[in-house]
Length: 361
Image (cartoon, rainbow, N blue to C red; front, side, top):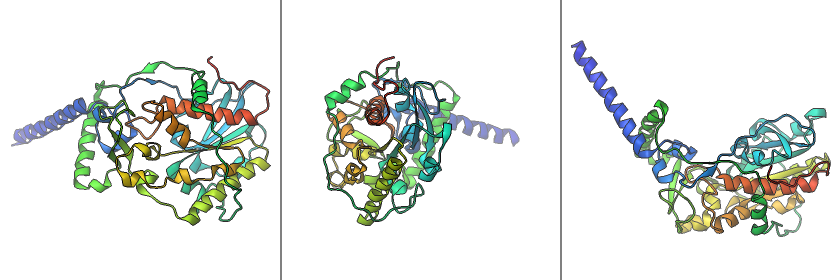
């Protein structure tokens, strides 16, 4: 009897391992955060054009001749890629935006005080960072916003010329075949997530939408886009009072850093859904007002970067994988764009003790 049970158990184990291996061989090893949480296969949404393998630069010692930049942000900055592109001219330290406050930053003194601050926030995190639930500082509900002015963004040709001057790194290809046992075990993870999605489809953490163009991504399904279900445009809304609080609180941050004579950049990034909104086949989502497009970034007295229009311009110019097709984050061209825009704002505020023109090493 025991031998029978053992044989059945071993047969089940073999079956599960075989199914997991087959799923992984077909799906291809997971490399994107969206494919990891949704079980949509890399075969469909993995990037096929090579990407620059940018090494992370997150926390580096202060160095003579370099300005030290304190970066407050989320996973876009925690990856350390745009910092790496500027590391010939700056040193960096990073704190996650949920783990510090404006008061903490203003209290930094001596060798702990940075030469400048970059505050980076993704679109879906804007209400948490600056709205009525903000823990970064006491929310400001009333303020006097100046008359609206046109954002002064450099022409795309000028931006791309500066991007071409950034350091370059070796190109890498996405892994398409499993290389170890962990890759095989991903097949079981995919099977488990996919089964759960069939039972509770509304609980799936990512969704696929059709596109009107197949020239935006290098994936196996270039006419579809894989998105985080909690992207602001798909998941949330903001009322006028909270939007006004976001405006006023951002303005309060800008004024406090200006009064402290601390050079700074307040950077906002569009969610992937918003970045590609003009190409969505779903007309209802296509017509929704994007939160980041309603921001009064022009009220931040020249310290603002709203990356929505530069990113959309980069996409419209024919650049594929500005956001990776399997991920919520940028490909290397998105990080290059951010590096150029951030450097431009920092260079305008910092003294000329060293050159901040970004060039090839």
